[in-house]
Length: 158
Image (cartoon, rainbow, N blue to C red):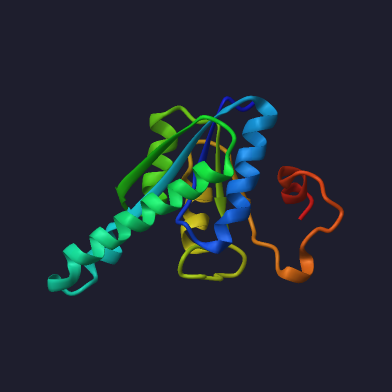
């Protein structure tokens, strides 16, 4: 059913569950995993000119660390990529470029936006993705499933 899964990450705490769910689904379907992190050019462009180079370097370092975290959490061979651009557009473009079957993303990112149920990036990905999107919300500590089970099963049941 799924041969290629894109796991979009910004390295935030809220995306860790989405990473686990994406990896679990890929394991279940023997799919390849592509971990993607996007450096938001809007964030760089909005910063003062004298800080842009330093900010871009910091964001690149953060993106690399986010992808390293995915690699650490996965027992699968995976492909990683960092892209510059608008996050939602780049995630959708990447999914199209590699002919992905599924995009997995968290519902809130680094900025912790809580726009109703989905963050603005997740919402745009859902609306514009050329492939199905699985959004995974971070559980509050009181909602943490104590019965065990797989991350994918838990995500579907929430």
